[in-house]
Length: 183
Image (cartoon, rainbow, N blue to C red; front, side):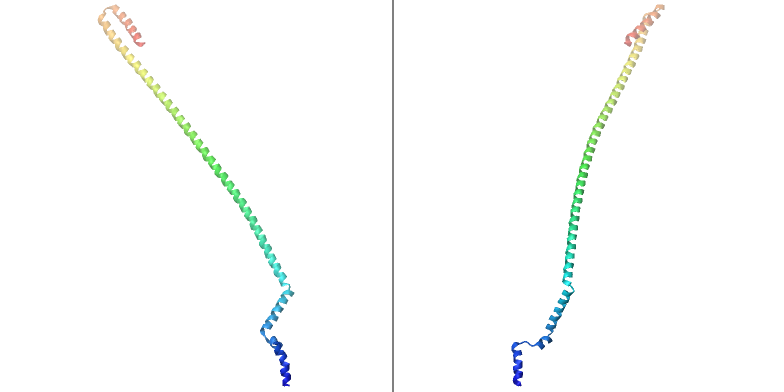
């Protein structure tokens, strides 16, 4: 029997496979558990759910990218519009400043010409006053000269002429002197 035992065990030992030891090995049970887990996952359709979840997430990301691109395009359009409005506002501001400068130049020119006109009028008024004052002074000098000449003539005539004819002669001579000096 020893021979049978040796012979019976020999083929198993020669093969190197021991089913009892294999079943008792924890790695075997870990492999069985992993197989059961994978089988359960396949049975419950988990891979399809995972793929659907990943596809949904990819679609969501694509939608977000499309939305982001649309928002970017909208932002670029708004930026271009703002830049256009800014350029137009700057152009309008330059036009306003240029118009204000032209108007200021016109006002300065008008003010300078108005000042020159006022000065010319005042100068003419002053010249007219001076002319009138000269004329008045000349008239006063003539009047004073006439009166002085008339007094001197009267004194001379009164010294030279005597009698009743002298009064008439004196009056006519005095009038002649006055008329001559008045011219």
